[in-house]
Length: 120
Length: 304
Image (cartoon, rainbow over all chains, first blue to last red; front, side, top):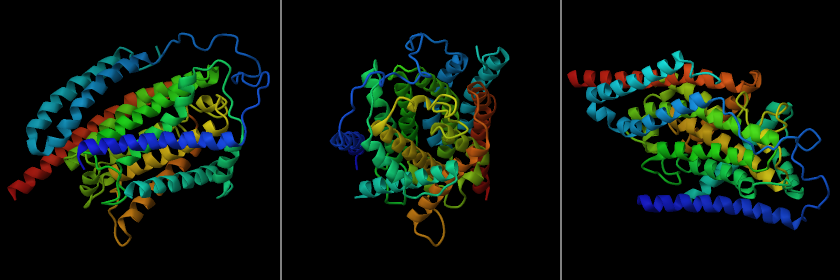
């Protein structure tokens, strides 16, 4: 199978899965539809409507990790092709990536020492 | 044909995981329970909260199911039994599983409910923790196999499974895999007893049925990926290859479900701190270790 066919198959699988969910909806719909009653559609908030709006701005207290995550995530994009050819290239590959990884690892340690690994 | 077989295997696996999860959490073995509760959920009303983000609310559970199924599509059951033997298989597993976070965040944001919202944002934080260990340990596996194709990764473990070859990577990957399918003690987004169900709090009826199915399929997928990447997949004596993969996958799923029952739920703060201070350095050292072992192995075979 060519790569295009493989991705077409995966797309078909995704569509089929959505089809399964839709058909489950269809089956449940044959049993009847939800009755409209007052107070039934309030989100669960301990028995009364929530006082504050839920869709508000939040302080994401793990943003220090999130920034480090971005750096590491970019690095991993380079790691995969490197991992595949690693055995062919041998020691050169180890040294190349070793320097790259050492810099990132030092970055992690520096972030740690500056308190980035904690709730902000 | 293979596609149908794999889908059937996934469904059977999801059913077994549901039975097992019920057994572990209630202490009663009820083999009919998943089917009965599934039919019952279809017969119930599926309410929509009063001011939802309708698209996010509807897409969340379905996207969770789609991402679990797509990740399972590149994992082999036996040499020929795989939906697509993608050239970038190991990377595709990561790509598909990234949408687990998107799905749960959608399910948290969509219903405009406080508990759901907290659950969704907690899982976003959980992804920041577990994602890097998963990616890095798979790099160690790919280095040994010289390939990202999942069938070649299994073949590379014919002599020695990766769980023995790189035990540190195995432990880190196993724990991170438990976090992906939010099993206890990593069940921060649902957190029963604390968040009233979290991201699942506002889902009822058929939507909840889809979400529970998705969760069970996700557990099977992650157990299968542990099997393929670390336990040697279909390699094993006597039994046919597919039976080995199935047995290992079920065993991993059982360990995942049972292990967390004896540990208290982690706090988000501790989860992130431990992933970044322990698991990520360990995963990086694992890459270095595999690199040195591979070079030492190839140079010693050359000198002989």
